Structures are given as structure tokens and as C-alpha cells.
Length: 221
Image (cartoon, rainbow, N blue to C red):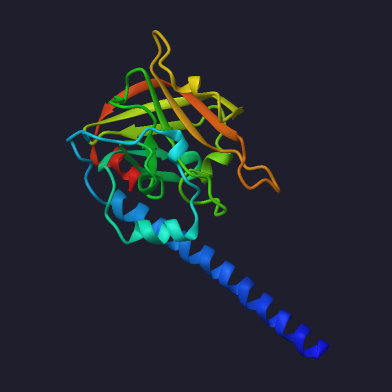
């Protein structure tokens, strides 16, 4: 009886392990598909009227939430794109930080932000897969360039701040008098901690603004 029970438990553990592995693979595949599909679209010139900016309502990127998001087109519309070539990051930008938005790309952290003015703040999920959503930012360094586009212009920033902060330091997204900045925020994982209280903060200053051309548009594709 004991041998049969041990055999059953071992088989069950193998099944559970395989399910977890494939769940992760399927989740990553769906996220990548949503992201690449939106990147092929044109940026909407119409600003979304409504968006969620409640940080407390942001949920973790579980496999079930990813599947649900992939089955709906519910988002607040792509209002821009971001690229950080040094870490091979390319994502659509959505208005607000709703869960569906953050499972597709980056979300704006304040209402009515404008690229090239104030402190343009974006949030994104850090995933187990280092190549999707905002996960590549774990490798970003001071000096790297951040490119944003609203479909008409390309805004070029250079990172000059990289540090780990508490999730409660929300003042980092506030505008700073006389500065034109970009702020990128994602989770800073702690091994063995399910819900990390830390965030990776990257900030950069605006270097230049260019008209969108066939050449510079390619970095977002």
C-alpha cells in the first residue's frame, strides 16, 4: 500500500510540475503575441478619455490573468511605443495602468502625460522570462538611451539614474520644475519573496526630439 501511495504521489508531482512549466510557457507566448501584435499597429492620435491610475488595483501577471487578457481586446488604446535598444526592449504604451494594459505593454502612471514634457512616467511588469514586458530593464544601465514615440515624433532620452526604491516612494513620478524626463518603473524581485516591496527605478533626461521617419520607426518594430 505504501509503495502504491508513494508511486501515486510521485506521478502527481510530475504532472503538477509539467503543468506549471507549460503554464509558464503558454503565458509567456501569449504575452509576446499580444505585444508584437500591437507593435505592428499605428499609434492612435486620439487620447483615451478614461484610464486607471490606482496602483493598488494592479494585480500580478498570473497565467490565468494573461489568458483572460488574451481573449479580450479590452485596453485603453495604444498611445505610443517605447524602445530601449541596449536591452532589446520594444513595447506598446497604453493610457493608464489597468491590468489588461500592463499584460500587453507599458502603462502611463499619470493622467494626460505628454512625451517630451514634464516627467513622463511608465510602469510595466517584471516577469520570470527576462525577455518580455519590462523584464529587460533589469539589465539597463546609466547611459542607455530610451526612445518614445507618439506616432509623429521620436523622443530620445538618456538614463542618468538607476536605483532600487520602495513601492511607496510614489513621489518619483512627480514633475520636476525645469526638467523634461522619463521615468520607468518595474518590480525588483527578491529571491524567495512572492510580492516584492521594491521597484527598479530608471530615469533619464530628454536629449532631442526627431520627426518620425522610416528609419527611426524601425526601432519600435
